[in-house]
Length: 273
Image 1 (cartoon, rainbow, N blue to C red):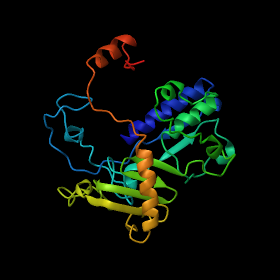
Image 2: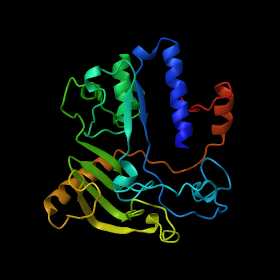
Image 3: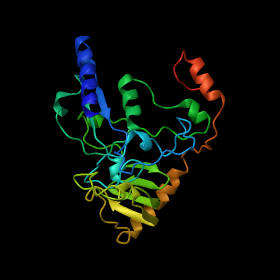
Image 4: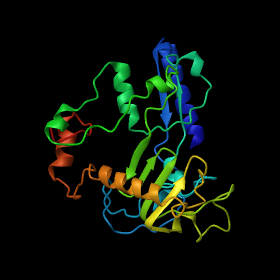
């Protein structure tokens, strides 16, 4: 799979260069999440959101369980660093030479690319329709001053992972039952991991788990008992931010598929204005 990805990137960059567009191009390649570290599940008959009659994700038929996020804890579907701390890189002739080949360790979320691209295109990221509907503002920050080297100060200091996880500065707070809570070794999966997958390990954080992800990125030590005041602060902030999460009941609109197929010339698109 990595070989295919490498080939595709080569074809894309070659096409841009052949067309004389590479000098004006900013290419961003980013992973969406860490690799899956659970076991191979049996396919069941539960209807999935994107494909009927397939439950248990897709691990039951595509063996997506062969990932290794070492030395980070957990993996895909978890709030540990193995699930949410991923690789990304920038390339292209538009990238200033002063930052080419450098490494950026500041906090960046995938949602920040929206405001960053808007700024580069000269577009205001503010969503007036959403504001009129009473929806929360777009959670995206323009990172171009940081990434281009014109500003060394990180604009983002926190991000809401989900209703049970918050990262603020060097701290991460986890609440509730955490899945995919184990660690893999340098060589994983292996002959001893079958039936003992990292993804089958759970951690009870009902009282709050606190990790210093800057100094302990593998999240070996829960320091909640050492810093109860920080736990309290982050719990209050987590409750505040969680109130902005848009809830959905999972009801499927029967017009969704039909409208998306017919309204946009065979391409899937929004069916609600």
